[in-house]
Length: 412
Length: 154
Image (cartoon, rainbow over all chains, first blue to last red; front, side):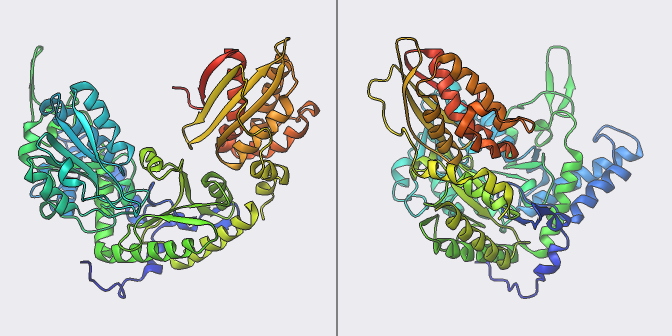
């Protein structure tokens, strides 16, 4: 599927692009394995933010002066860059948001508020991040709709045998994650979208863990909505995007009211712009959008097929190493995993392990990873997670295994 | 090995986390408090029985969590058994200061609990250390029946 040789990529040189990787923590060289929470930023993105504020900063869209034109052009060019990056047919199908969470809330409120009625079903999965669960719970409470869940099997994959019986005509939306942030499971998005469409349901894909890791083409996937965050893919925090098909976006009412999103305003009533501007009330995160476009440029120079292959190799290498530690259980699929490994150790609770690792400069994450129902499904309160990106190395994973061995000795 | 980590996980703490004392259900408890730390999923179920003067005649706990929360609960139950309510509240205050205040002198009255002082260097772990204490505080406030308490205010 992703068969581009990575031999040409100089991964060591790429590390030099990330100033923060030279940081130390507790007197040790930083090993940053918390990329599923947020990625680090290359110099190119930091420079783009700096350049914008030094040379282009102004409010967008209605200004008639030079700087405003520059800012507007840069902002809208960024929208086109995002559209191209995920294979959208038009930049009008890209709404800038604060991130994945806001993108999903936008759909739940604007689309859900108009089209969901009591008795309708929103189909989710047991592996959803709270950001793709709680907005639907709120919608269900408001409308009387019901939530239904595709179960997760012991191996961390979705139980697709249950899928046909869950996918009834009452299902109006199937919202699911591309890559699980706890298990690393990669879901068969195109297949799931096709099946959902067969019963007339729309589909929303949570691409938070995939947008910076593998090639995405929304038209090939066939999804109706796709949500992702800039900060998990080398971009700044506070910027992300919602993709929605033009027809669907324009069928939705606004969700936030204010400037930028109107055609005309009278005291009693206003007329609204078309998508995407209908959904961008107020001054947007201009610098963030420009930073996100710079992040996309950076990622595209390396190439997502190469990144995917590199990250998957790291994840499989780590999963193998961790599983050989005494009294350790690794979660998620053995092959074909996203760039992370979640595990529990008999010797130490995830929080003790994470505190211990931090003393050696190793940044892990311990806890429920905003996946409480999934943790319960596996009879856990939390796991320890190591998550990777293209600037991580097998040497760093070897060092992690050494540190985990030391933790077993310390806590046993 | 870093000294900070050794100070946090002193041998006494590791011992109590591996073999917690007063661990189990208190059959004739007057009040039961279910405490949780939603940030990490740690849970404690605390049972307390009072004597005629309202002092803590017996106290036991069950639950699961990190070494810090388990050891803190275990050490706390050992320390509080037989104490008056006023003494418990004073210890709660002193313990909170011990695990949060860099300048705290760790009063001798805290006894064994002073091994928890390493927590003050790890602000993210204060809630782990305080979970059992929040539960006992709630038990005194409630006096009888069942109650819940969380380290995150709802």
